[in-house]
Image (tube, rainbow, N blue to C red; front, side, top):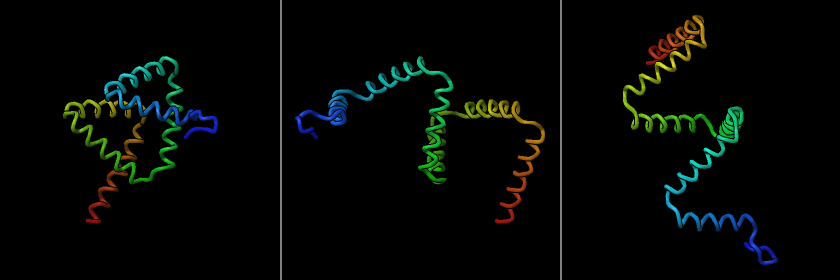
Length: 128
């Protein structure tokens, strides 16, 4: 929509420019400029920047979505990952996860999660 003085607003000019660009370029073009943008951003920001924006994004997402949303995207992600990786991949990430967990927790932690797992399994059997 044009302003009274017949000039476009920035919003309209940006939209029209984006539409024209999308007609002239393919997926590879956008992947390439996305890659370049990501590299430039990485050069200009540190770990704390990414932690902060990740936390803000996570909080915003959590405010807008419920448990079903997270279950659905988790399932989709798991299915996509399963299509792209083999048994060795899962063994490797499982080992890495176990090693990282063992570095951060003590014997009491494992006793507690074992107890909770046993109780849960017992409750499942009682309900069957």
